[in-house]
Image (cartoon, rainbow, N blue to C red; front, top):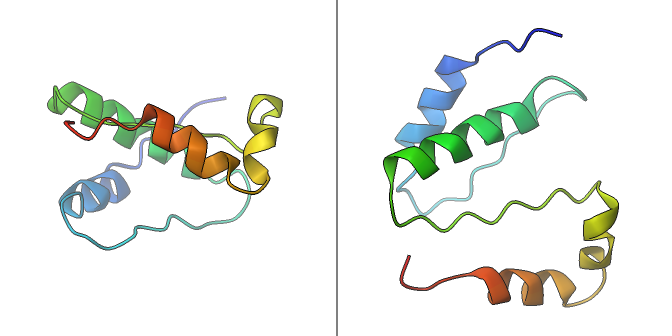
Length: 84
């Protein structure tokens, strides 16, 4: 399957990077939301040396426990580096 680059959407996300608002990516199933987020994460990791990216895919078995109570908060808190 060929991946379609969504440069317009990626540029829109890049322009909103430093705004305090929560960004929401929506779309129908299998339209490329995760691939768009992967491209943005790649951009952040290449452009900014001191980044703080925590990637969680709640559909994977390894993250199943994060759907319960405070587990998601604890997971993020343990991986978040305030100096980044």
